[in-house]
Length: 349
Image (cartoon, rainbow, N blue to C red; front, side, top):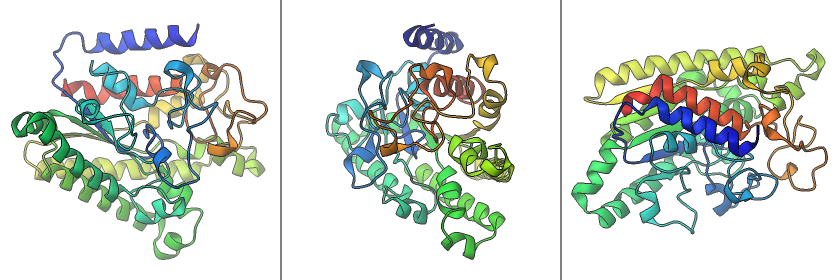
C-alpha cells in the first residue's frame, strides 16, 4: 500500500469516527516537545533541528518542515480529524500569519520539558516561554477577530500538551543536576506540580478544553535500546516503569483539577499502551521493524545525524515504527492519533 493510500485510509477512518457529531472545536492549540513541534526550532539557535532531508520526505510536497518525522505528527492528524486543517503551523514560522493561526497553532519546541533545566540542555524554548508566546497570540487573535469572536475561539479551542519524555531521558538520567537533588519519585512529583501549574494558568487565560499527553514506553525507544546493548538491546524496563507511574500521577492530577476548576474539560491522552502494543506486535499493524529506526542504522541517528547523506536509511518508512532513534514514523503517528481521538478526544466534538 502506498503512503498516500495509507494516509487516505487513516483519514477516512478518523472522519468516520466523527461523522455522527458536529464539530465544536474551532482551533487546535499545541504545546510541548519534539513529538508535536511543527518547526519552531527552525527559528532558534539550537543543535536540535530537523529542517533538512530526509526529514519530511513523505510530508506534503516532500519538504522538511522541522517536524521530527518523515511526515506529519499526531497533532496534525488530530486537527484533520476535527475537520479543521491537515497541518498545524509553527508559531515562529515567518511564512504564517495570525490568519493561519486562528484555526490552530503550535508553540512546541523539540528538546524541551516541564523542567526549565531540561530546555537548558539543548538551548530550546522552555515551557514557560511557550506560554508567553500564547499570551501574545491571544492579543493578536483579538486584534484580528475582535474580542468577542476571539474569546469564543479561545474558549472552544482544544489545547493539546505533549511533553515530559525529555525530562527523564535527556535530563534526569543523563545529567547529575536533578538526579542529585531528587529521587525519581520526587522528580515525578516535581514535574507533575509544574504540569498542574501550567494547566491552571492556561485555564485562567480562558482555556476550557484540554488534553495532556502521558509518557510513551520510553525505555523502548531505539536510542534507549542501543544503550542497553549488554542486555540484548531489550527495552529498558526501569524507564517504562517510570513512565507508567508518572502517567498515573498525571491521571490523579487531572481528577483533582477537574474538581477544582469549574467547567474545565480535561483528559489524559495516554499513548503508552497503544505504542507498546505496536512495538510488541508490529506485524498486526503492518510494520516489519519495531526495534530499529528507518534513518541510518536505526540505532542512534537523530537530528543532524539523520541527514540526506546518512547511509543505510530505509526506502519505505511505513515498514518501521520509528523514523529516527527517538521519534515515530508518520504511519505510527497516524495510528496513535486515531487511538487518542477515538478514546479521549471525540468527546470534545
